[in-house]
Amino acid sequence: MGGIDDLPPLREVIKRHGLRARKSLGQNFLLDLNLTMRIARAAGPLSGVTVVEIGAGPGGLTRALLAQGARRVIAVEHDTRALAALMEIAARYPGRLDVVEADALAFDLHPHLDASPTRVVANLPYNIATALLVDWLICEPWPPWYDSLCLLFQREVAWRIVAAAGEENYGRLAVLAGWRTRAKILFEIAASAFVPQPKVTSSLVRLTPRTMPLPCDRGALEAVTAAAFGQRRKMLRQSLRSLGFDAPAALARAGIDPTERAENVTIEGFVALARALSDMPAADPDSVRTVGGR
Image 1 (cartoon, one colour):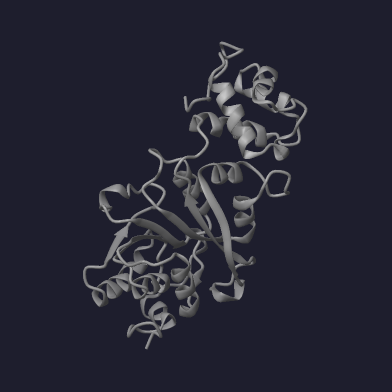
Image 2 (cartoon, one colour):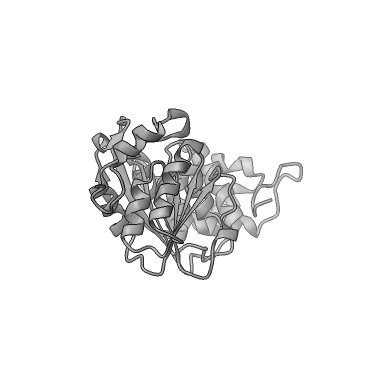
């Protein structure tokens, strides 16, 4: 018995299907069904909800999400070896599990969605976790297609997501996450819970979209934060020169000291700066303009 259903234990499933975790795919399987149930519960009531799971692997979290009452789970898995194991779960929960073989970074999810509320709940592959999160944070239109993200990251990445201005881990990821969502670390999971055992602790982060983020051009905010944190040890009047604008004038318009460094500027400050740059002509006509998403 599997503990939460009548399916076989995960270690048996892994052995039978030859699912040795691959480092190249960023795989670290979570086999403790008590922990996968805890993650599923952290996502909130799932009745009537479509759940998107990236990197389902042998299906431990998949089973927990279905046992918790998810209306439907869309399991996106790039590893063909795992498909047979996931189809066994689909047979146990008829009509409630869609197994999709795809690279999550290139996969268009929208044709698979319907009018039901959608959440993403996943033990993300380490090697694509940050890239996926950024894609979900900058998606258009906003509010997005999901009503929450409940995601496992390496602890250091989780800290970067929730960091505030002035903190060591504050950077571009924290600005984008804080601008469009409310992010919170819910709990940590020890490395010993995973197979193979990673070198770091993992953290479960919930991100809830803000209905009305502070208004600014998303492309401009991306460009400003990339330039500012790309040279975070420099003063902003220097690090922003690469954008081809009159940086001191834009900083003055945004109410930011030109000698300030990126790590000390609040999310509100970066939004004001992005708005200021969007409204200004390029100082260097020959520069490559990246502000405003161009």
